[in-house]
Image (spheres, rainbow, N blue to C red):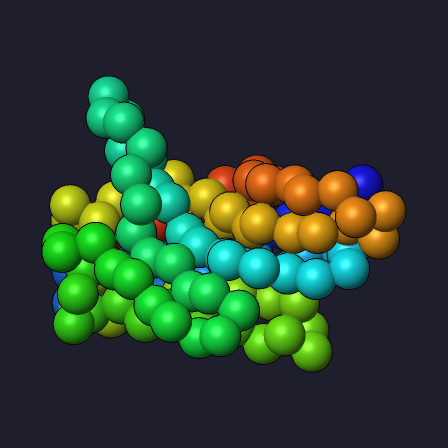
Length: 120
């Protein structure tokens, strides 16, 4: 009963920037940890960044200093600002949200994915 809608992916040149958005809707009592994962062809899905309800963040070493995760609790939305993009950042990016529903169920929900391609 909780849905995530991702947006913001696209094609950019190395060194460029993109901002991903993930909006949650449905039977939401509270949003807990929110995050972004990515999966490149032939590779395992890996954590990119997470942010807790209190604003504590965690980043993969490969994106530290370049990516910034943030959230707007009023909009039930998490963002990923990606700067200084590299070809190795090319992947499908997936939003992940931990949520307590209105009937007090703990859920972990995945978005549909949005493709980021960094290429000259």
